[in-house]
Length: 436
Image (tube, rainbow, N blue to C red):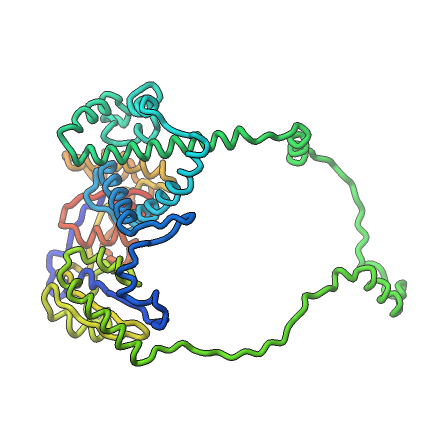
């Protein structure tokens, strides 16, 4: 990834940025509705209902944490970017939906995976593709090595954390195998009669040659055509279906705006104040905000004049942990907290090697290749030469050099990594363009 050469002369360039002004927003667009109450929301431990079955927040959060840990373990990454994190959150919800909906189908149809079948999927003759794609089970050339699986499993007894991760991975294997069995049942349950298959073939492959002559209306003189009102009426009667219109209505209505009263506003302020102390104590700011706020946690850095005047004037001269609020901003009440203040460069210079990817399989293969190239560079290989050999964008001819740029000039995961990393740091970053 990027070999960063940060501006050495930071005078006049270092800008005090604030990470995570956790804009803790409680929108008041409908304060009269009980579901808009911040305190009510806090105590709503059910995040949704799937086919009549409630999904507790705690269970949903466990699945999110589990998905993140599994990803870190498989990819050997300690940190993940926002794009990947959002995808894992969505994946966790899809997991719960499938678990509930498909679980009922599997149970009704008697679809299951036995212990012997699971053993065969992991280290038998029919290794599951998901197992073969795990980097730690591959040799130096990227080929799957079953002995590494056996060695890894045998060492789980001494590592409870890895044992927990492996159990979760096996659950994914079982869930995926059940789905494949279900899909095969559906596929083999279809029968297409031969006459339909023949007709489909003819429609796609039958061709014919025709010869025709065109007589255009414009070539016929108007003087040769005569018609009267009876002709028009006759045409209209024969084609009346083409002139039908849907019935229209003339409606009168009055609008009653739902505007919060002073009492409503005071109630919301009181509810927010009760959360302020808990927000000040917590060290899990992102989780607290996402659980209680109607706006997600904002993990960006801000410099002066990028925030509203109230925050700009107070937080840039304050220390970590400073709280502000509840205060009103437009149609919302908010509580803000200063999580961290750092001096960061305005511009950086980086090199990169891009492995383009669009599908999940392409990302997995590109990640494995990027890890290998990163290891070579760490062991003394020339970055520019490798960029020329493996790069897939216009920078390959320049040794991967991107020149000087600002954070906002790049997509967020890439820009964040470059700004926050020390000089000379190597990273593997996922973006919409592929793996850098």
